[in-house]
Length: 122
Image (cartoon, rainbow, N blue to C red):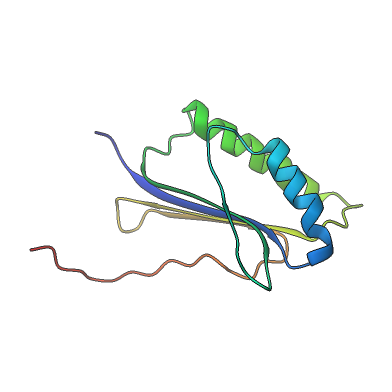
């Protein structure tokens, strides 16, 4: 069975003029083994990545492909000459209540948040 996680990431810009370049970059470079959903907002332009009930191990090829993409994306944001105005946010929640990993780059609007709640399962 293995340890399972819930993972979500957003890749976006708040600048509508930068959206066509981001869209093209994502279409050409995001790992084909994963799927994305379009962000439908009048303030943000980009994509949401979601993976639920998944074994998110760094040794897995799919996770390595995602991480390699994120590294390249972050490098574009970080470059001194960058005028892209792109942003990245990531959250992974593991089975253990204290196992939460977050990461971000760029001018974050904190589109991803974690909330805990108690539910009943009868």
